[in-house]
Length: 312
Image (cartoon, rainbow, N blue to C red):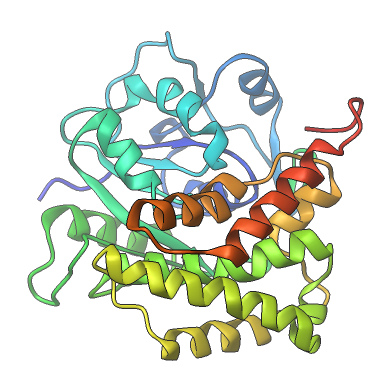
């Protein structure tokens, strides 16, 4: 089995920067490529600070010649994925293993549609990275859950084994789950409930933990995802809803979801991959999803209210 030696990353936000900084402590810097273009490429070349240390990651623009990387990771917001796919095109070859750290349940299919096979399912869980400007701070890297759609111990695919070996060599916490589509949908369910509700209410986790009214909204949104999952061949259950609330209740009361942070900073949110995706699936399957539809409308209305001079 050929080991993963070179890695390409598209998306140097809080999550991407945190993981790439840790990886760079274990492999040569010349084995790392950050795929970016235009003004973003220039910012990255000037240095990225993670936990107080400045990193100068090698940047490759779309027209730069490069051999395909052994591993390519996409860690952008969903509305930047199309650009990232073009930025990273020369980093992808027939043997490149691809992972998506994006939220939602659609990015793997989108990436596979652009590049073909070798796309593994993956989820980032428990990382507490926050970003201000070009500086990222984290205390917990969390865990990357990954694998093929189905993974049986002792029968892992070559791509799963390659990534497993790479994460072990580079100090990245990981977990290989038996049913990755279920895991992806379980996180999607929680995101649709907690992220969207927090964005509308502009509140920290503490309010989501203490307010019966907020929890009722979250519950309604998650129940709609559970209902739709069965149409998509995914077995979510009421038990999974209970687990999701338990995870929510373990978070720091002062923390905020990424979607809440986006709204407060007047940035574009990822509502398209949460409420809008649920609404689209509901229409496709002839069912109703009124809670997610309302949350979608409210968040789009909030985005449209941003000052024309505000951040985007």
